[in-house]
Length: 194
Image (cartoon, rainbow, N blue to C red; front, side, top):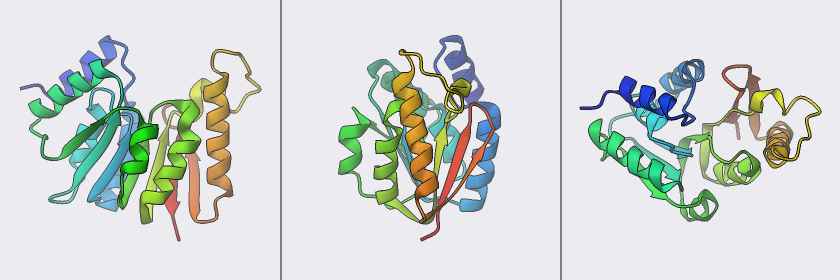
């Protein structure tokens, strides 16, 4: 039986990005309040965050999570099985851009932690499926501080541009109440108010 700390340690040792402890604590507080039935996660990695989030679900609640990396899918499936959460966490395998339009919702929470350059597109899909009073959480939105600086190096340009657009879209959307927290690598929390 794998325990959650082992999953975390293994991910860290293999340099697989997982949700940071302080971010997890903040999201946990929100989920405690929200008492979600359905969560959508964009970016499964090894299933660590989905497993962590699952303890906040109402009875019969579930998590849909999307991942395209085959190695990570394999590991996530094993981790979910080891934690006996196969009936609770469902992995959609493939590109989120192709999978998201096929999902219906409504979701109580959408957690976005995948390709940074695609955050604006993920946001549009998330808004379509989010319940009123539901929340969208975007992780790593400050991206090592690049997003708020005049950083423009070629390698990270797409990610930085995507995140800047994502933050702007959230800020300008009057159906949302958004706050940016300097937790982890930047955490944005947006509540759908209408």
